[in-house]
Amino acid sequence: MKGKLRFQVILVYPLILTWTYTGLEKIIRFEASRKAFHNQTFPPELAELLSYSVPPLEIMLALLLAYPATRWWGYLGSLLLFTVFITYVGLIWVGAFPRIPCNCAGIIESLGWGEHFFLNLLMIGISIVGLRSENSKIGTLR
Image 1 (spheres, rainbow, N blue to C red):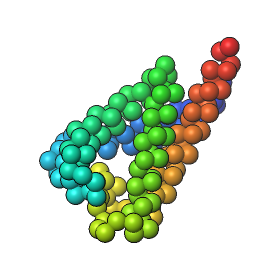
Image 2: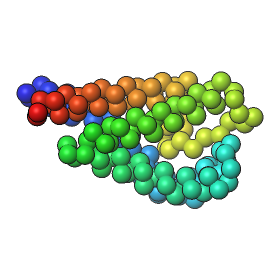
Image 3: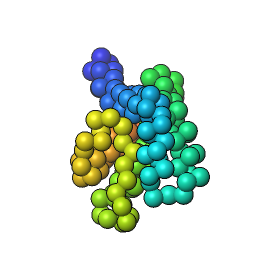
């Protein structure tokens, strides 16, 4: 039991740290983050909506992951959001857009598109393993 608990803690921490870091970074540097959203290849109205909704969503995911009762939802939300991110990064990486925008937070900005893609892929993998782990816990409660 101790080993399984340790595995679950090791699994959830990278996601909690990632969402907390990126969410707080966007909130602390809100104007720079907002401008970066407006530098994206989507309409200004969507950029404005995302600049206000993504940071709280990232913080909310960190909070969902922090509590065992809501962890399944945190893993699911992480999987969904990282899937959106990796799709967008993949499109940028293959040159699908006329210019290369970035709205990454802090040190993540220093990654190349390939590194960014594989980091997101790793986080998707962690989210999937976390979901499966949570599903197995639910199965043992029945």
